[in-house]
Image 1 (cartoon, rainbow, N blue to C red):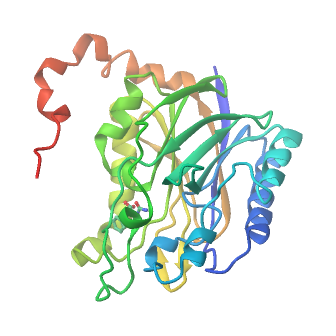
Image 2 (image 1 turned 45 degrees about the vertical axis):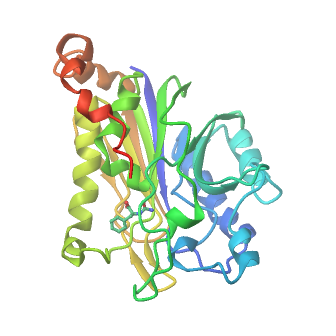
Length: 305
Ligand code: ING
């Protein structure tokens, strides 16, 4: 049995002007709790170093906008987290806003092994929300203005004695996210998220946020025979109520552990990576049962215009 003890490190709100130091203190505290609980891996949320800044139109204050991005990873404020990982022998997934030397801006995550080395990096493929300022909204969701769509697709990495992959927030709602990684043998998908409870384009979805969160991650796990670790930044962040409900889901689709608060909380589960075989080698034996020649429409490029 290839057992991986995982900690879903849920965060409560991060204030608009919170310094990196106070945030990294919270991340280190959760990582230490993970270590004390015997975890080899701790999963943090999306944009885990700052408040969810795309909720505001920030073009009038480029200094503030730029302050939310990391130009180095690890950088001066985050080196401490990498050092702690190495000392404790605990790896981690961290969501953050990336500003590359070329000036590209991505909603990114990194995967760090137990020796503190960066194993992989992911840049969010599915960017929700809108591109232009919509002042009538109660709050903005300007990810499509402040990030570019990730150009690298969905990769997997050999780490933690298994095959692991990363996604971010809205990605979890798209079945292709899990399937592309499952076709590469993924056994655990890590997904950080910031999900407001209010969805301005269709408020009828508001009471269904919790149901939809579970639905998509449980389906993704079961239909691809993979573990899924979903980790929220939840609670009321700068006045916006955000879904918590971090959870760890088995390849069967069963929720094996979930958060019970809307603040900083560590949710721990023993994940047997060999459990994936029960589904990958039976119902979802892709080589035997999949009919890609019947699925061409799914991968057709979008019509121009
Ligand atoms: N957030 C949201 C998500 O997909 C959203 C977008 C907001 C969807 C509110 C539904 C309701 O969970 C991110 N960051 O992708």
